[in-house]
Image 1 (cartoon, rainbow, N blue to C red):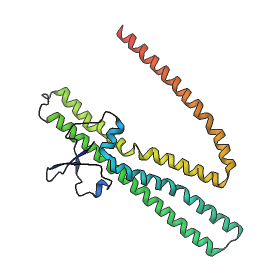
Image 2: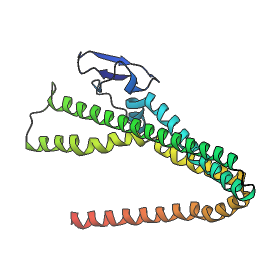
Image 3: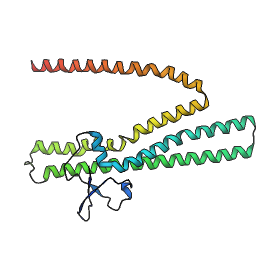
Image 4: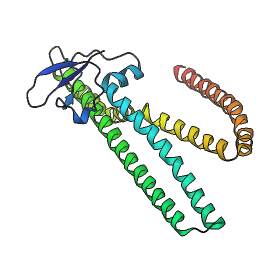
Length: 234
């Protein structure tokens, strides 16, 4: 679905197709307004409509952060090994400089990712608030009463924050956590395969028991919910 953008100064509305260029650097940046009121039926579709191009960059930054979180560990290992075994000062200084550069790069990419993620989330919050305002005060809207105004305020203040913040984290955050896990496990395979076998022996039972426990908790909660509803209906 095309995104709908409205520049706050010109008031012109332009329908834009999928654009990979980051939204903070676009000339048409401004308030993303869902003036067509055509909201996707799924949450993933909603995320994609609001921030399709931005999600590509967020995923790229998340992969870079996951890699840069693991590479300094290897630099530390080499520094310690060279210090204990050989003690070559020049080589140790080179490795220390490489390690410092990796740490600076890691922090810079992580900061850029966090800023970009916050931008996407706040931009989505703004789009939702503008949409709610248009639906509440546009043509064909119902007369406002105290209840309607209260609902509108609740949606604008609290509910938009949760949904808009989720747009920034929905794809990049799970990818980041999965990337860190894959990179760490891959490094362990490279360093000591036996440690990976021990790790799998400890973690694999959780993949069996945790879903079973969660299903049991869900059934119990559902049973209690229906029991309370029956007592209330009586």
